Length: 161
View 1 (tube, rainbow, N blue to C red):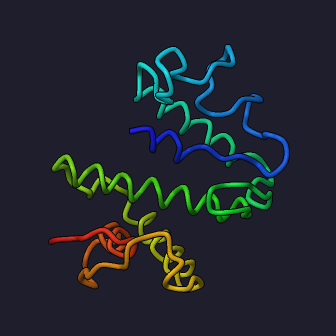
View 2: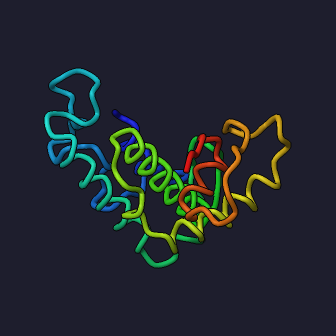
């Protein structure tokens, strides 16, 4: 369950540049959230940790000029605009994963945002050699399926109607 908190973390290339001078997931006293319980980054209150890291992400991406800055992320060193797309895609697809795993509806996920990130993901994957893609092969899905299902299928999730 540590993945949702990781989704929000962004390290600027060079010095740390998160709002308030601290990295998301780090408490005001400088200890990493969950440090008292070992290496659980979500600590005693996963929902609060997720919300805090989401707010830090939102604050980081609303700074003037941030979309033109360069960030170091697991996928490489990328412009802020691309990093934002990657984060939005991860949040949507992991939200889809959670909804499906818990029997909840995926209709609460914003369709317009899913459509935007589907287009972004297609462009990015088209630039990559098939053997270098970080996902399972795209899965079959109806053209008329909701955008969130088409995005999940593009990124290797089996979608059943």
